[in-house]
Length: 368
Image 1: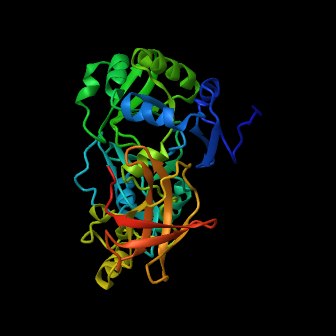
Image 2: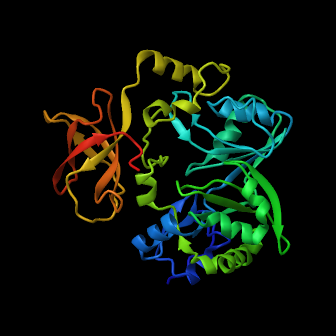
């Protein structure tokens, strides 16, 4: 394998060497880092995630560290969800929008103290965005990207593996809550979370020089349960109806269009970025919606990374298919569409996949 040297434009994670030892077959750039996306056996990796336990290098989920007297105020300004009841050691999934009401990220906000927060972000330069908003509002905060790198343990057996390493107390951690821990002198925070519907934990490594050691500890503890390397599975996430920011969204997507209504509180302060635009969008009526599509094509093929045009039965273009994959559980090709609200589950559509056209039926999400 060709060597990829760390640099400011495309960095490697603290777990990079271990992923190479595990036989990583593909990477994708994400937050100016290399994210493992395949170990060469997608169906084996899918089964490990859905039936056993999988170990993921997700250090690309970078953190924006926000501290200072105005930290809580800034975080609320950035998020369309009311965070007034958030407790210390609790995480909350949020939607961040620009002044148009368009999604710019869907991070998890972790509250470390009353004046200290992390935004655990999707693929976007949120540090620059946060700094700009803080400066615009003249807020007394400091912002930086800390030395924090998540390692995910996901799957039905994930809890047993993490408990074997840190103790049974981790079984009491509630969804999105987190706690401090240490193993062999390696400082971490453990959160019940992860980009799958199978359950598990994200272990936030607080010392990037110890990544290989932490990987080996988890790997050894999980060996009796068949742990192996993996990555956020496009098959599992599409079957489970999980949004991919930047994959299923474009430069005009608002939260209402992609099923994030529950994370928008329209009665919060006008200071919140995008909230006034979102009120107007809601009042005028949302134009698009995210649905599932069951394609007539049953060919087993890899998922696609580009958007495809969707047409109604009259031939008019009504939106886009934003992702797709062959589903082992449904035995057919499935995907998400972002289409006109004039359509409804059960309607027939045609997807233009550039090389051919295939029919499909719209459905609610999630698929399973």
